[in-house]
Amino acid sequence: MPSPPAPAFLSTTGYVLKQYYCLILRAINTLHPLLSLPLHLLLLLPHYHTLVAKMYSRMVEPLVIGRVIGEVLDSFYPSVKMCVTYNPNKLVLNGLELSPSAVSSKPRVEIQGGEMRTFFTLVMTDPDVPGPSNPYLREHLHWVVTDIPGTTDASFGTEVISYESPLPNIGIHRYVFVLFKQKGRSVVNLPTTRDYFNTRNFAEENELNLPVTAVYFNAQRETAARRR
Image (cartoon, rainbow, N blue to C red; front, side, top):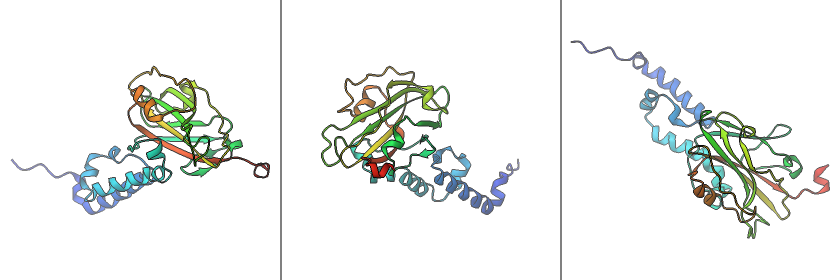
């Protein structure tokens, strides 16, 4: 019996590889998980592990440089995209500085990933209280929203800790948004105070495991001159 014909894409391997490299680079540039690509694409990539390493590095490097990974979170692999936007259209990017007046109202937090049957918990903290040189109140809890359905935004979840506006007094503070995937509809063990919060402990107590994504911005005390 003759062998079955080779798949069509193998007959033009050079062209296909070129197209697949374009796809993989686009995935890296948009921070989409590499494993979401088709299996036959991955099998054709001769430098698959190198690409995975580069992609992972690009995702977490800003969090490492900003000491978010280390002081707030353990290392993790981002698997969901989260967009945090303050009015008017101020998108939070890692390390971006925003004024306290610009972040006084709660942001819109969109989750791009998961399914409607998948639920997420959002946590926002300040690890630099009262000041970054001596953060003895670390962390200060600013916001907690649970039961956020995938592919929606935080307004569809349950706000269990209300949003508290950032008001840094000493030095430059980091404000960290962390998204966790829940195992089901959550029953949250809430802290009794906003100070001395610990994101790692909170995740462990509520069986949230490692984060699926995180982003942070910087802010410092706003003078009258800066508000003009």
